[in-house]
Length: 88
Image (tube, rainbow, N blue to C red; front, side, top):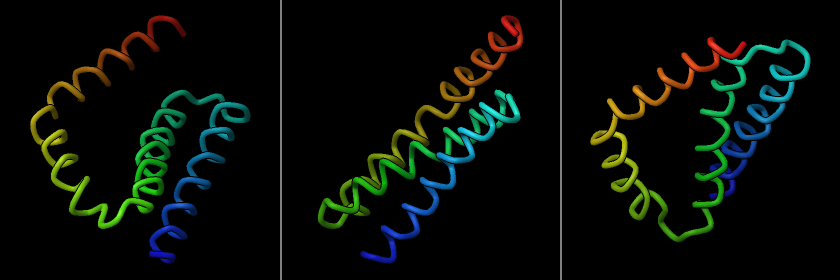
């Protein structure tokens, strides 16, 4: 479990710094969104490692969410990027 926490911590911290760098230095909204898409699940998974057997508890739930609502997620991201383009 310690190696799993180390990996998710490294991914989360890397994505956190990537988000800050993309937002402040590069000012690139698309990279910020990409970093957030990596950062948030890494943080959730890090928190989930404190639950006994997180793969058994969260794995099926995440699979159901991702398989049942792929089109809704892509539709939301498409609309979000469209509004970012309009207001920039």
